[in-house]
Image (cartoon, rainbow, N blue to C red; front, side, top):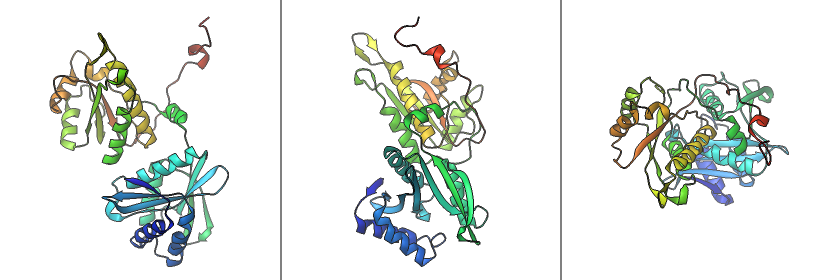
Length: 325
């Protein structure tokens, strides 16, 4: 759970407990105490596991258009569980809502220390880009790497989403990220609120391998997770059913959430619902009840390959005002 913290004493207590547990990154007492003092004035989020703080993140404003990730830390026992990503997602949403255009972060240049190399890799995986290295900010032994990220609105995320059919990194997707993606799907509108769309999250390797084994021709073979989309016919009124519209809205929501969280995917529907009915075999693997149809799979993972937006027709060819003439 991610909490926005406003109480100054709670901010200090959480910051002290986390930073003192991370000497590999925060061994200098003077710097550590400065963070503890200054964090009370910054927007502050805490990640909690069973109500116990396991991580935190602070932002500070550095310009009219820019926020800085001033300090963050997650207990080592909770690394690679998605807490850092969820903290950053909350902070990023805040910065977008406040009207900022950029977010930056400073760390030690890659190649200096193994622990900081992990930090650099994490920031890059979030979508930060290298801006510059300035050795004079700290000292020669700790050259400062500055990363920058442009903050996207919902419209920009829509424009950035494209189908990805390449290889995925061998990196498990945290369950909390998968839950967030699924939540975006079931939050989609549905005709007369009949909620005809449900999903199965698949992140177990054995189950994934079974599904990948029935995909012919093979697709998404390196995906570390999948969202399997189910639909069922429930009439909204009289004989009208909006199941297709319902699951289409849910899928698009999930695709956007996937991109926003730093992953990639592709909408595979026709591939599994053709005459060979691969969808039925997937349904059997997942023990899907008879009243449901499997209509789509969405692989989820971090992209390894470069990919580019497909060419689109000009706006004027597809959009008219007031009349098609």
